[in-house]
Length: 466
Image (cartoon, one colour):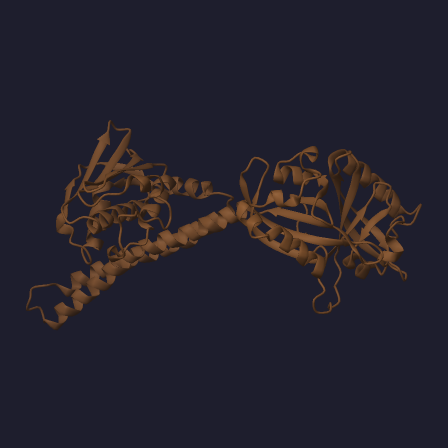
């Protein structure tokens, strides 16, 4: 599949003819610019197809049709063409034709690039025409949807308004125009700014437009909104980091139990320790490790398929079971016992069941207890309460150093460590992020209260399974 861009007036007269369309059809810019497009001779079926599509584009902003176009030296090529309507400040109209042909492209000389390589999926793109200085001269309906400006609000303004303050200070807009002027095409990916000040993640291609003499007379700027894709990528990264963090507990437990079994075998039973029991516990920990790895693959697949995390949440709620909180806590403490002093953990856990994935609850409790043990020297309290048969409240409290008030709003963010943490603590700021994700994925809520020098309490609220 190859693509080529042509800019025309609604009457079919060519305004700009790029290198790709010249290679595809054999017609040069000198032959095409200023005349009716040679792709559709007057009176031909191709011209009639164009007229119908043009009328639709003028009415709706965009139209797509398939037709047979002429080549310069005989023969024809089958094209699928999308017309984008551009509007200027005076209400004048220009059409951007994006032609697609399913043919094999010959190898191009080094340094020669298509003037439409980035237009892989035309729908949803913002197409803007700039003059040679970067001032917006024409505006499409797609651009209005992506960037939020009406034509009368943006035509006549410099395109740098779409960039962040930092990018403008660094001269990025001017740098991109210079690259497009020199190479014919400039590309970029980064944060862009909508009319209301909101940011979106955009993929940008700026194509130089030439007159018949080869002089640059303007640019065609195409922006693709990739905010949803960026969110999916960030969600996938968060899942990898959070689950990678949580894998350490069963892995450390398995290694620790194997080491204890080896010591018991070397002691030949003299110390009374049962190596078989240690190996059994190691096998249990490895089983949970395997389950968590399966969970990683499953959750990432869902996150990559959904524009947000709602699919993950729906799947987890569907899989949630009536989980005995005390059982999940006992398993979490067993894993932590290999690397932590769990004798400092005091529990007040009545027999109560929560509607939650059991492995998720183990991970939540392991994270909260290990954090409390890490950041305090005294006892850690785990309390569970039945909220009138409607909910289960789990509170993990310590009397440690606490969290600075300014850090509380972001303490559940991935990679966020409070300013009272230090390098000797060994944390990476992923544990609480994992807790929030797992709790919310199971339809619950999590909150935190902390006072520097007095300690921290994290509360988890889950649905009751009674």
